[in-house]
Length: 324
Image (cartoon, rainbow, N blue to C red):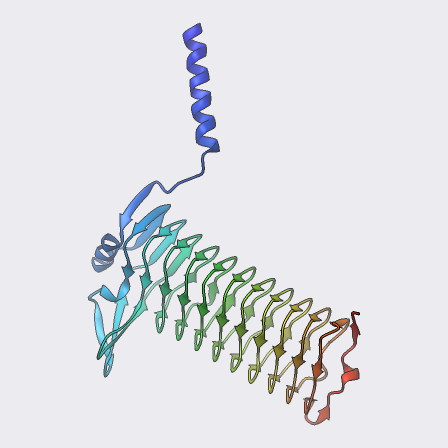
């Protein structure tokens, strides 16, 4: 009986230890092994792994000369990582002395709840299938400059960018979901093209952010977003409905020469410093500005800002209240 009780107690302690201990990846693998599998056209699906070494997709030999000095590397199998830790860099772009190497992902590209310990570079890549980077952490700089997403939905939901995030000239052919994302450093979407809806609701911008010269065909949503430093939407074209409701702009915000083709809403938003709509055009009519808050140090610039085709927008058109 004593031995039986002792066994039960030992098993209980072991189970309690396993329950209380933090979960750890069960397996480890070298990045080189993953590239070998890709070279054999094997689909990649790794769940709960630690990946050692740099994962460089430009090392895949399935390539073609796309143009003079440009080599495109084709990744034929699907690529999916779930709850993985990448100890090295991830590259799908490489600049040589005389040639530029970039990647074409023919199927899906997914990094779900992954942890990137080093830099991530998908510059000039093309992703033909589903793209999902949800709930992932980018600990250092990430570069998606010039990337093209062809699928109907692209997910970065709840991801954390702890370094600079570059999305200049990125093309989103489907719905771009950046809901609940946090950007700790600079984030840039200059000259990005959104051919469907873009969702940045409840996103935190702790560093400077730039959205100038964008083209947005679908609905543009920034409701409840927080801009702790300066942000710039100048010279952008918002072709559908745009909403910036209940946002907080803690530093300068610029919408100079921005074209709002359909209804725009800024209700319940707070501006703590200067905000400029200089030469902005609201084609659909006056923006909805119910209970906009202009704090003590805030200023509103509506110089040459118009609605419809030629009606001048006035300060009184902003239904706002000022905090002392």
